[in-house]
Amino acid sequence: MSTTSWIRWAVTLGFALGGFFDGILLHQILQWHHLLSLVPGMDDLRLQVLWDGYFHLLMYVVALVGLIGLWRVQRRGAFERGRPLAGALLAGFGLWHAIDALLSHWLLGIHRIRIASPDPLLWDLAWLAVFGIVPLVLGWRWLRRQGGGGASGRGSAHAWMLVLTLGSAGLGGWALMPPPGQNLTTVVFQPGAGPREVFAALDAVDGRLVWSDRAMGVVVIAVPAARRWHLYRHGALLVGGSGAPAGCFAWSRI
Image (cartoon, rainbow, N blue to C red; front, side, top):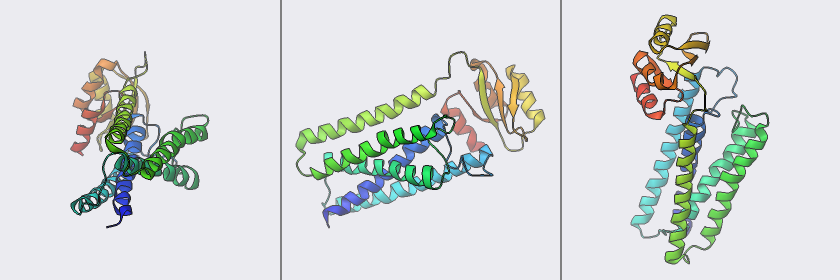
C-alpha cells in the first residue's frame, strides 16, 4: 500500500476533528453562530440547533471513515506514527477551516465566525489564519519530514497536540463563565410549552421576562444566576449560563 494511503485517511480524521472543534466551540459553547445562521427563513432556534446536529452527525461519519481507513492501513503495517501522523491530522484540521472560510463564509454566506461583530470579515480572516493556515503549514512541514522524526519528533508532535487540546478546553471553560453582573439568560423551552408554562417557570425562579419569540418557545429573562438550574425542573431544555451537561441531557426528553 502506498505511503499516501495512510496520509489520506489521517487527513480525513483531522478534517472531522476540525469540524467538531468548530461546531462545539462556536455553535454550542461560544454561540457566535449556528451552521445556517444567515440563511433566510431559518430564524427558529430549534431549527438552527437541529441543523447543527445534522452537521455533527456528518462529522461523525467522516471521522468513522478516517478511523476505519487508518485501521486497515495499520493492519498492513504501512502506517507511521509520531510527527508524521500528527502532521497529517493537523493538515486535515487546517483544511476544514480553510474550506469552511471559503465556502460557508464567503461563497455561500450561510454564516460568519462572529456574526454580532461590527467587522465580521476581520474575525473570518483571523480565524482562518490561526486555525486554518497555521495548522496546514505546520502539518505539511511535519509530513515532509516523515520518517526522520525519531523519539524527539514524536515528543514534539504530542506536545503540540496537547497544547491544542488544552487551549480548546481553556476557551470552552472561559466561555462558560457569565459576564460579571449579568443576570440575563436565554431559555429554550420544550416543544408545546406556551405562555402559561413559561410564566409558571418564571414565578418559580423569581424571574422577569425581557424578550420572547412569537411562540414563547425561546425567551430572555432576568434571573439570579444561582436559580438558573431550577428552570430545568419547569420545562426548560437549554438554559444559557448554566453549563452544558444539564442542557444536553434535557434535550433527550424531546
